[in-house]
Amino acid sequence: MLPRFADIFQQGNRWLNWLEKQPEGSVRPVVTESVTKIMAFGTTLMGYTQWCCSSPDCCHTKKICFRCKAAPVRTAG
Image (tube, rainbow, N blue to C red; front, top):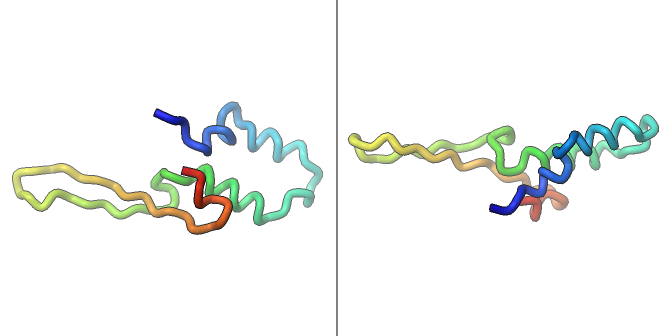
């Protein structure tokens, strides 16, 4: 299985470590927002819909995670 794109930012707290080293105000809010969305991509953090099997004898469920439509995030998954 291929690693998620977000793993690049999350492994060893790379994103947070880098962000802390930047001068205050040097990282634009849109960059922080985009990276946050990338890290949430493919998780239930952005919301999800849950589907349940229609058979009364079946208890299968599936969560469909909502996707972000921001330009930097479109290819993150």
